[in-house]
Length: 414
Ligand SMILES: Cc1cc2nc3c(=O)[nH]c(=O)nc-3n(C[C@H](O)[C@H](O)[C@H](O)COP(=O)(O)OP(=O)(O)OC[C@H]3O[C@@H](n4cnc5c(N)ncnc54)[C@H](O)[C@@H]3O)c2cc1C
Ligand code: SF4
Ligand code: SF4
Image (cartoon, rainbow, N blue to C red; front, top):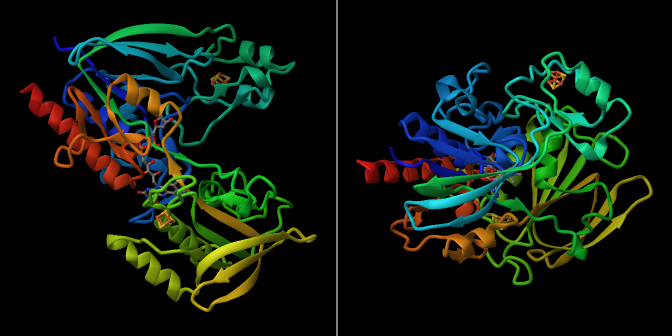
């Protein structure tokens, strides 16, 4: 029998690859460093290009007809698929085709197979939480750093005895035939870019943070409120290319931030009442079918300003005055706004360079580099990559690449 295949990262790309391999009868181990699968797509609310909601992507196959299925999870119920959460790859040695992989697994405080999500522990102690209503596996998580006087009682009172507060880390060694890297991207937190004031005022946020505000399951249940005081936001200003196309940070274009900024502008103007939106940009890069977002948002009154943000002045009433140099009009403009949203660069996740070096791969600005354009998803002997691990990518592209990897592997096994 062939050795299993290892998929690193359980975002949409890794989940797709793992589920399709497992469905094809191949034993697959999917490791995820966090305590839930889904990656960056977990809390995005609506998804371009269709404006469908993101919820049912999680845990179900990427097939329209069965997206709404709540009871069947391809990740949990597929016998060929071994999902390991809170799991890190400690080392990879051995020859291609017979890689020896050592995994470090975090303590399994809550057994997801036993947790029925009854909510008892959540009511009792702050140390238990639900990462997202869409999380897979469907189970609460425990954070020992938030332990309080009621934690022990909460654990003892769990009706299914799903909680083990004494759980410890463990190690596991596997031999795998192939490795698929699906480690995705991270949204840069622009704390060092003084010109944008991120971290200095609660109403200066990133696009990923705005996505969580727009999410009906998010902290404000979808209401667009100023984080500083909970007052409804009426004016939102976005700024593009924060840290991207910038020699001091990331020289590349992050490719999808124009599109998700415009998706958010559309939701704000068309769904959430009379919110005014402005976008400060260098270039708007809405490639292919996404040009429609640009046309639609222009029609619905979004104000586009080509130029640079030069100053941010916080006001006593919680608003922000944004001074912008408009390069088309050659003059400075002042905008008074409630929320200032930064389209921050999409960077390689932490640990990416170690993985690239360990496997002897090439790097493309810190993401996994492919060896030749025509092979695209194949980056080495028995090593593949897909999705945003290869650089910022939208969901359809990530899923297509994951499927391309699976079909390459299946061809090789015939
Ligand atoms: C604000 C915003 C809005 C967006 N809106 C849309 C949209 O509307 N439509 C659309 O198509 N796309 C959208 N995207 C893009 C979408 O998020 C990506 O296409 C998608 O997340 C890519 O999936 P992925 O699996 O490649 O990577 P990720 O989602 O980044 O998943 C990677 C996974 O790997 C895990 N991981 C990383 N390193 C390791 C490691 N060493 N070991 C184990 N696990 C690891 C991570 O924890 C994560 O779970 C948006 C992105 C942002 C930031
Ligand atoms: S009490 Fe037990 S079953 Fe209920 S949510 Fe907590 S861990 Fe899950
Ligand atoms: S996609 Fe748009 S916002 Fe993002 S880096 Fe490229 S041009 Fe800038």
